[in-house]
Picture 1 (cartoon, rainbow, N blue to C red):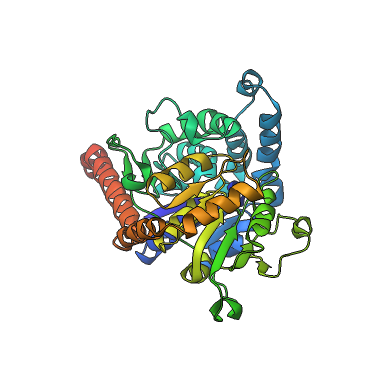
Picture 2 (spheres, rainbow, N blue to C red):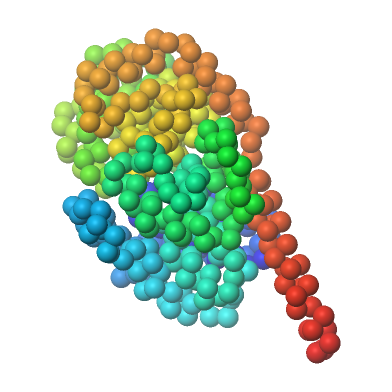
Length: 400
């Protein structure tokens, strides 16, 4: 089958799960083209996939970042009168993509979270079904609203008015998590499936220092898509850990200003990108903003967490991790050296966190999210092809 995928670096960590799935579909012999931007182009190539890179003038961030700035400053009534930037991006990009593809027509359009607007438009343009790969928990359990406690105040508006309507019109929705993490007692609609975590990372080298004997390592990591003031988490964590008998590895994205960290404590090391799969086996604790990707990885490696949800869907991710016994939570409003230090000690001094984290790791070890997702997509496409043949086959045969 021919599958057109859509990713963008503007949304942070929503694209690696889709790239993991695209890689799996490619191994199965399907033809894939990945619409991407400059920030994700090298990742697409590293995955061995064909990249259709949008020019800078068509980057989602051109319309999304001003829309987010307005969202943060507007009242809800004002916000409701603004256009969905994901649809605006799709409308401006569709002709460039269609012309670039020439005669190549997809059997399926598949998008990440922030690619849904473009995905919907391309799905209609090519009269092809649309699959949405949700990189986090199921945010549309009631199909009419988003649970307020799962989101920051402004984040809920974004999900409720920009993302939820697009998710509801997808022909197939795959959730890159499972029902255990989602803590959902509701059955999913026939068009939705839990597939389990989907992990994809760029290659990278592990620092030799991590392998050297010494105090245990604690990983402090932030989103690949910086949020306003989220560097506060890192600065507070460095101070809270400065006098503890641990070693600290802080990884930050290129969009963060390293100079804001000031002088580093003697037990701390700051680096850019390192694959989490290389770091986590050496760690006793993760401190993060509660992005779904890092939380899933920490659970997969059996590493407990202290989470400071900063925005978007991160409160919902953090609360689910805590209910499974793998994390302590510090709210954004109460994040201080004192509160963070107390949460760190609460986790490190209580073996129950390590026991529960190991239990989740054992559960994840028996799940192959990519294989599950590939199976659902192939079954969906096979059913669609049979349905089309049933509706048009006899008439076509008579014509021939």
